[in-house]
Image (cartoon, rainbow, N blue to C red; front, side):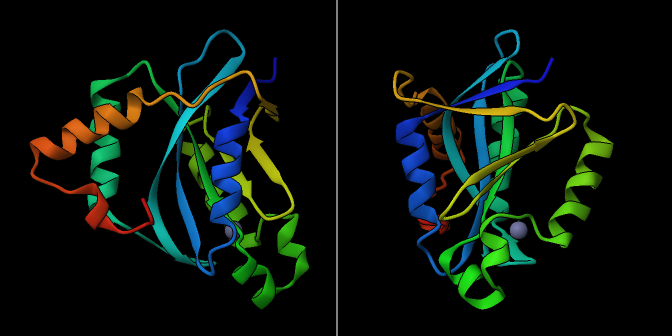
Length: 170
Ligand SMILES: [Zn+2]
């Protein structure tokens, strides 16, 4: 059975805003799976840059990895944007499609984790990619939950890291 990824409309709007940046961003969306449902709770950005050259922010990746070590009940959908900047530079094809470079790296991720899901976010659409062809459902009756943000904030504080100083716009 294909997984159903539930995206709260408020979180969908936050993702839309990211496509207005010139640069592309990459990050993770967190969920706790309930049967076939993966209700997304919040997001955390981990990288920023241009198509094909999105640069990871190591401190942010460390925080995410530590969160998953402490909270194994959580899964994630990785995402990246094709921003207005990407589309202006590389053409309208990228408003509706993954790049060939994207597909290479996604297949590689799936080889290491058969549950891997990716979401492409563009000014026009959001596309999910995964082995079971997961379905994206945007819902207005699911709120953004901040448990993950709080947990990551605590990990950061314990390490003396100010998340706001790590770039990636939040
Ligand atoms: Zn891409």
